[in-house]
Length: 465
Image 1 (cartoon, rainbow, N blue to C red):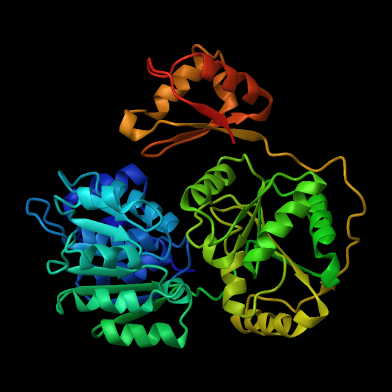
Image 2: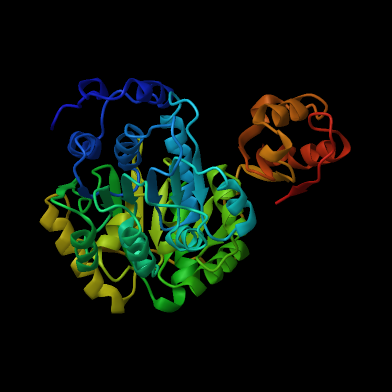
């Protein structure tokens, strides 16, 4: 095993060091160690790297190191497939840029009104992070200029192509200078990605951190199923293994809602996440899953892209995906941050060929084992011991625009509301709304007290989700 390489070994701009300190970064991850030296030299890079590998810091340090915040104009553009991922990348880059005075970064995505974004571009941001469709729309309206771009990043490029963004990406690439630095990150390398890479990259260094190999800490188990009994079998697995948090992957969007309905019938706290949801609903589902107000998230592959939660106890394939890359990307969401992971797959007779392809891929990697199919009895009737989520979420209709901070919410809950501090969980503050997780046993009391009292001297509408 290669020993870890410290960030101190790189010739980083001194303004980047406070950001590394703020994030607690001292040693590079494998993708950072392979890609960063070339990125800092100004080379184009095409990298195979899954979510959670540290790729944001890899391209973030590179693009931020070249930003001149004393001048105007947009100098770097990062394209992402979803608003969730763009928001996460934007937050990460802002932390990395802690030591760069007066740097302006804008996140520009679809699913929200165009007006405020147009207004925000009156003064051009130095860095733009966004989805291809919305960024192109703003460029076509002459609200955003790309002629000063020196760094272009495509993050999760394979999913952007899956979602139909190729035409928008190519249109944006044409509007950037030819001498720019281009960085392409993708979890998989299908032919379409290589074609796009050849069109936009020059003499690119190609790196991979073995995105195809499963992490050694993930236990994989496969269960035979009758297609008509998937839902009761899923419920039986959740009761047997009792993961604290679970992501269930469905191949079809319509299946996500059906599975959630079945799990709710059995008494589980489950929510669906798919690409046809309104953006606010998607945001709230992700908030509730991350803060432990929901213990089962039932998602489609595209909708779950950008899901960045380290302690997912288990991943369940409600049915096997059609290719091994997608399977490996799914199960890679468990077993992170040094924790053990669990991957459970329901396999119908018609999916045996898919299982064989996955098995061959795992064996080829040298880390897999032959698949052994197990049987488990599907759940009969409604159980009395379905685990409930530990927390419940309150939504407060106020946020950053109201100068509301997490400390203000904690103060209102522990002060006038009289809640013990250990009953308050994760707090998320957005532009116009905030979410706070409360221990389920104290949620009703917290709701009543916040509605009757004030936060930061003002009354806001509060609802229980």
